[in-house]
Image 1 (cartoon, rainbow, N blue to C red):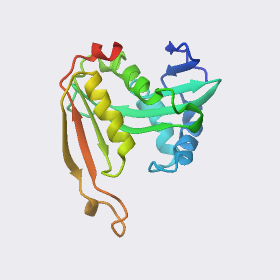
Image 2: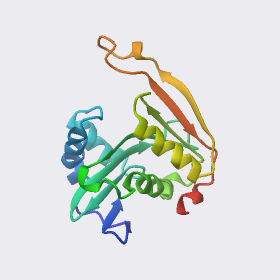
Image 3: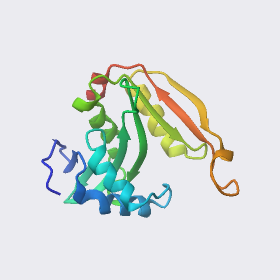
Image 4: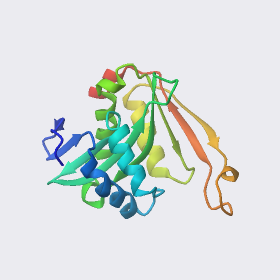
Length: 177
């Protein structure tokens, strides 16, 4: 984990951009949550290579305890899309997910961002609470619409629909509050 620390908090949690060496730890964190869709290890390596400027890891005692993958969609320079949020058991109860979102919003890569998009399954109460709380912190509206119906996913209806949460517009500097 050779990336310089971008932000250090008083409780010992460090927030920084992911680097290649984090790929395996990020994949393992996603597996260990037991609730996130697990992508190939290659996908997490690509995130560290292509989307490091808009993604974040939270590190505690030299271990990755939190991760958000995010990117600015092509053609939407005013939007950051949050793909996955995961916090390990060792990092829970510290507000790490909210602090990771704040860290992303203050990155130079998000200088022109005034909207945050993410998708959430309707049974994922924790994620809904996280993003609704973030919208309140940013003093922004949340618009919720179905983006991907369950029928769009392969399989026998095992995947829930994905609801698009569009938060904004907001002043990204509100993330410092």
